[in-house]
Length: 308
Image (cartoon, rainbow, N blue to C red):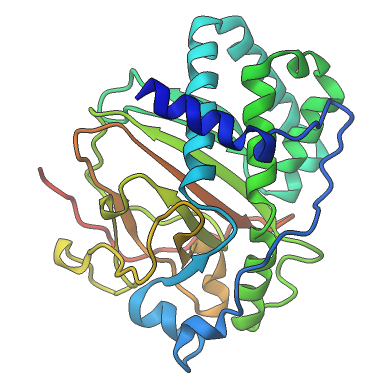
């Protein structure tokens, strides 16, 4: 297994490791875009697709298993480094606390950034990192010492490169929903990488506090269960998305769902849950948020408890 991961590391280092230093150079260079969303909609609107199934599957030709396996390798290296060096973990936490008091935080209208180690919390048993380009730039400007830590900078640079194509996809989706101006000039993207440990256990689905969420990759696609929004939800309503596209070296099956920030436009969120399987798993998700937005209090359908 070590040799396999090391070969992956060598193969993609030249692709994922950009020579960004703490100069704040996080320009969005053009990437190959996903195909027109109309191709996947079968002559119905995206709003109707969400209403019928709760999601839209898209074939992503930008990244496949080679890219994401390398990302998870970098993530493991970061986790190991921070667990062995708590002073650096505390420095990251301090950077996050400083960032959420800055004006750039308003571009995302959330406080979820940086590293969350819940590996010792019973049933949670997960470790995640919430990345954004503004947070990356903030760290480069105010904490140049991070650039001297390979485990940190390699992971951040990989996130930077991988998330680039999805802004255009979110803009396409917003236009298809008749909400072309909702993201102003460009979507506010929060990029989440998560590691589920074998003792992870979830008992209740949830709604994402986003405009749109894009499930980019998972090492276990069958663990994601979702349902279209209904006034009354039961366990039987939840199932794994039907996927026409495969997870392979150079392509991936990605799933787009609405979150809670579009209800004013009569677009309701997709409830979902990641179920346990007793194994270590990884996943990557991109969240499109609304800049300078204050969440409204809405009551959504009650969610059922999953019993194991």
